[in-house]
Length: 296
Image (cartoon, rainbow, N blue to C red; front, side, top):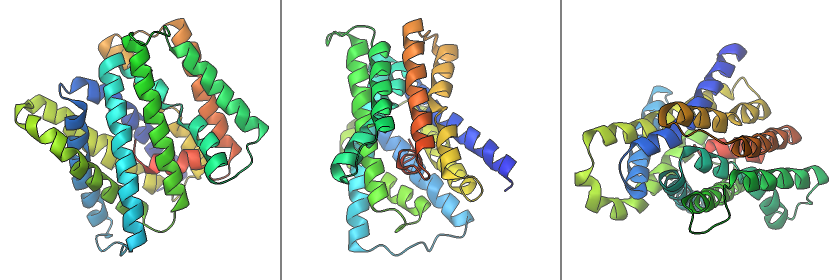
């Protein structure tokens, strides 16, 4: 893979991740069913990628690895469920921008959990994201669907940040594709009891959207990211993936006529700028690489 094709693969991966909210809205199913189906299809896709890459033997997991992957799977399940609830309640744009708050959570939690000093530019990052979220919120009314959806999206960003930090603390031990496969398997098992009663009522068309979520937005997007990292720096990859909200909001605008207000566009611009700045601040950003490894 050349640097040009690797960069193209990254943009395709970012576009596929941006499709997540769109496909979740198209699927007329509950968040638990969508997450279960996405994880199940992702396991199949990632297993196929590993087999094609001749990595089917993989890394032998230790007990510590198994515990960490279990925790990561639980956090990933919480992240996806809260994100898709936000999509159903408030729409793709608000869900995507609320989720994009995760770099700010990562900065704060890194300082608390790893006892790292928070620098001035990181404080500015948190400030930018906070102001952006205030602008994105149409009205501060808990009875409002937009506000409720944004709160679910922020919860999605928080759990994604915790997942990223857990990946950071245990990075390098398990190959990225194998880790993603096991995490998705945990998600599917956790959601199966909640999804099982309604699986028989899911329409064939909805299974198509859910299948595309698992194969394209998880398996293929993750595989493109892993393959491109052999050529592209993690910092560059993180900046490219900062375009995910742009792709998601644009697609929702075109497909669902979710026309963003000027205030929402300004808030979104601040959040995206904050993501790019946070990616440029670190040589191998935990808010970039680890988070993308989780396959949002």
